[in-house]
Image (tube, rainbow, N blue to C red; front, top):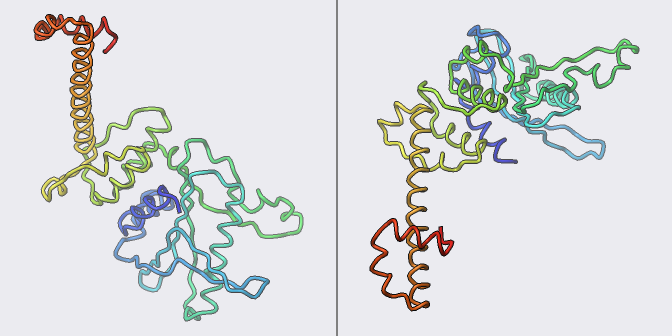
Length: 287
């Protein structure tokens, strides 16, 4: 399992984030799914292959939603790359969990299985979102279609992004900026799941300075992406100054060695003059 897949799941598995994703993407911002109504459940299903061996199929995320008499198994599948066979995969996931409900203690308490596919690529999906798009001959045989929910996170509208109430809004803003080729400048919106967010940003920006961010308890309570990016930028500046100083010291040391070798020890005292020192460093190509 790749790093990107892992950090996506860490954040999305938080009940408030999970509920927010469903409410915005499936219910257009209506607060249908409450985080208190979600509980963890097994995200593995078992099936018997033709060989007679039992196999397990693991989903990215799966939670049980319970509200009075209403229940549903809600799943999320993350995609970095486009997948032509995604409808077949989702049918397989959903079908195996329907089968599990028949074969296990779910008997008499069966509920719907819903799956959202979150696609994080920069290019448009442009791959099948229904079974008939993979197997068009089904319609000729009076077969039943099976449509899937695919949401292109990088292509969400500003209106959709503003609907998010959880930390996922930051994720959506980040991918939208990345897709547009714009620098991500952060937001002053408070981050609830700080550790999960820092891990996510470290992996997707390939900048592990996010993992070096130091926050005390007070800073953690007020943490926002603007403050975090400022701290990272300051670290970069400090590192650059330190590197520059080290490079300067090494260059002057080499210059002193050259002057001694050439018998120009009388010029060593003149190196205290910064302009003269820089002139010699340029002369000997040490800058």
